[in-house]
Length: 219
Image (cartoon, rainbow, N blue to C red; front, side, top):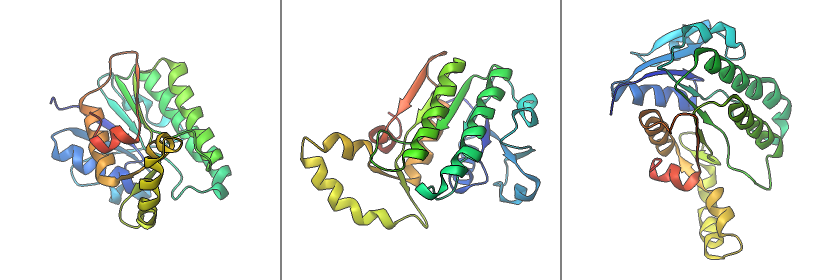
């Protein structure tokens, strides 16, 4: 493992704080894009970069070709009622990240998308798919990670669905859907993201990581 410079958008959030701390512990240089009022939420040892995740020009100049950009910006607790916010925040932020990455000729972009297709959350899925398309259209070397629901502190209620998942995996007609839309933990997500940073895909390619691989930590 070689130490890598990592730039995180959304690094003051639920997943981002944990990832930043894990990357620091693994010896990487970590910079976190932040609004001024959120700097205190950046883990000790990470470097704050003041900027706006919706405005590529506010941070593109600080990126270097060697950076890995991990994009974690997104609407908290997504639900069908938040469709407008997905288009106001989630989509413009990944488009800004792609623009910044293209300007800097960035080595690697890591994007947390969402598992699809799925029978619910259509507006959220559509926005995340548009984010994936923006990456592909830019020709960016990228890792796209597709969880469905991430279990962790304050996010445990889907555990009650585990028996249902087990039943669905037994039937050939529902097995693929159950696996694609399976539950992952916050620890599995952090490990997968850290491994993605340390083991990028071949230049010019997009690696897609589905739920079964997230559970394995990418391998």
